Length: 277
Image 1 (cartoon, rainbow, N blue to C red):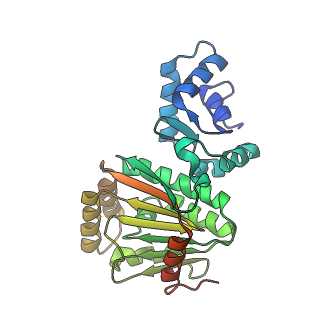
Image 2: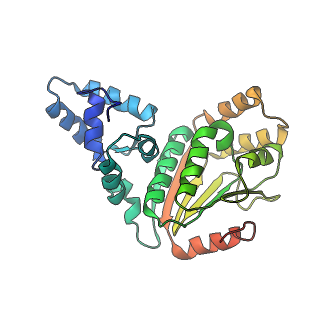
Image 3: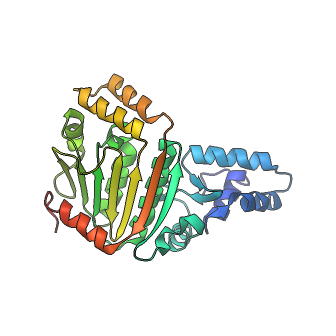
């Protein structure tokens, strides 16, 4: 917390959100009471900046700490993570799902969707027992090409929790195989399948009996397919082309569910390609 300017709006926001997600309207009123003279516009300005910096996530008018950012704050209060991952609130009640229940989220910005997706994964890391491996299917693993540091940190945090990262992609073009260098065939395993399992806009993650299903914008997914088919190198120019595809607006749907039977079937299908003990 010593990294945040004392008595700043940001400090007040973090102090409130360390306990639980809060409706933005209620949060604004709390800040105005705590910090006399602060305007509503000033609070919203800071909230937008904090979201841009990935410190918080905002969904359907509810503000919450970004668990990914929280884990990187070594000097932040330990109680924040404890309180935050043990409770749910409204649309953030992922951890309270019963078997065969699901929650859906919709975004028009793939980058914001990715931030929220990572946030969900960190919640599950904190909640699911150690040793529950991380199974992920992507049509293409473009995250490691655009945001390598963030994606590797997520994988490393998974491994620290006694998990294996089992990555399968549904294509074996040059760039699909290029990311193999980020895996070690032990705790982090990779397989580029010759044939796609699902449609080219479908991404799947499984931890424990939780499933995260992500449906990327179809037009964007087709652009990604074309890019992967045509690209035979990966340099700064290629990275910029990929970034331009992902930076476009596009509809993204995230479905989080808890389904022990479905999760078991996915794991069994994966384990034909990986060494899992």
